[in-house]
Structure formats: structure tokens, C-alpha cells
Figure (cartoon, helix red, strand yellow):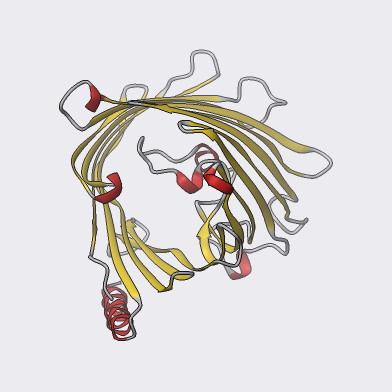
Length: 342
């Protein structure tokens, strides 16, 4: 791991020097999540630990106004390695702009453009709805996407062809068919968003499932200090003749206190319901989350410089008299970025 990290930094340094020499633009970013987690079941503590949940190291390189690329590495605490750390390749793509009016063609390891996962900022720490319940396989995947803005930025659109198994699976772990995604967002007037996504994959009999097909609808109201997202998710997976139908929804409100108090603090909540098999009774679960984010400082464009995130989470089964699982997460999160190198 240490040798790999040293090689990575040397490679990035050489890339930075090369870009400067030839007049291109390069910028480095970093993001760090240090978290305390306590998990309790039936009022008994099951987990109590500190850990580095994520460290992102990102390299952006702009060749021309219409051609740029990104590489992102993710480091994290892991008990699967003798050194207590793991590594993931999170982004590795090139983006061609100018070919599509107000749009781009992106090729490589990139975000999955389904639901909210591609613009999910982890303000409540936990994953987006479709990622949380395994509808999509990770936030990134290998493939090609085409998309962009509608005239006057009244929304966005994107279509995508990906492997379908997510960024953690390559080579022999892939099935023989691709997954296809279509995503649409409409913004009829500022502060109001509606949209939806669709994913379809014919994985084939050699896979853990033969068919995966889901759709999601979402809406947003953002006015002043109030920001509310709602999302509905439904679909099926398994044998094409007898697939397992699934359904769920999320409500995610956020309220910024800056307009009322002289403090950069936002309160947030989230409520989920997920039914993994709509043909069975009492197999669903609820998730309740409440917490806050406090910003010690912000970077340009409002992104967090240093922030404290606190979340209290409860997962409750539909089964009568079932004991809940409670979780407390306290996370210090900080980001940095170098000046643009030319």
C-alpha cells in the first residue's frame, strides 16, 4: 500500500509538471471523512469505533475548453488488509464537450446516472435511496454516457450504457450483457425540480439474476432556507417469468438556520420505507434519521471546507414487536483544492 501511494503521488506530480509545460490546466482535490460510529441493537452496543471512512484524492486535467479528464482514488479503513486500509478506483474518465449542443460524451469509469445517486452529496451521511437498498451496484460504473442541458438550463438529460455490476467488479465478475440508463430532470422554474430515471439489464442465466428493471421518480422544492427532496423507487429483479418486485420511497428535508441565526448550521431529516418483496407481508423496513451539519468554513462555490456532521439513525422492521437497530454517527469532514496549475 505504501509503495502504491508513493507511486501515485509521483505520477500525479509528473502529470502536473507536464500539464504546466504544455499550457493545459490541472487541479488537485482532496476530501477526508473521519467518523465515530456506535451501533446498538435492543439497547446493547454492537459497535463502537473511530475510523477513516473515506479519503478522496482527485486529479482533474483540462486539455482544452471542450476536453477534460478526471481520476479519483478512494482510501478507507478496512479490516480486510493487514495495514488496516483499502483502496478503490472511483473515477477515471474523459469528457468530450462541444460535440453535443450544451452537452458532453463521457467515456470511462463514471457516475451512474440513476435517481439521486449521481448528485448525492452525503449531507445526511448515509447513501442515496437506490444505493442504500442495492438497486444499483455502487455509485460508479464503467461505460459511456451522453447528456447535457436543455435550452436555457430548464433541466438535464442523459443516457448511459454501463457494465451494470458497479466499480468494484471487473473482468470475470461481469455478466455478458450491458445495463442501460436514461435520466431526465426538468426545472420549470427556479427552486422546483421534477424528474425520473430508468434502468434495464438483461443479465442472463449465468448471473445471480436474469433481469433487473427499475424506475424512479423524484421532486424537489428549494426556497430560501428550506430544501425538500422526495423520491419513489420501484422495479423488479430475478427470473423474468417470476421476478421479485420491490418498492420504496424517501423524504429528505433540510433547513438552513443562517437566515434566522448568525450561524452556518443546517438541520436535516430523512424517512425511508423499503419493501424488498411486495408479494410478501411484513418484510419491509423503515429508516428514520435526524441530525445536523455545522460548517466551520466553506470553499468556493459553497462546498464545505471543514464541517461537522451528526446523525441519529433508527432502522425498524415492519414485523410487530421487532427490536430496532440504532446508530449514532459523528463525522468531521474536510476538503481542499490547489490553485489551478497552468
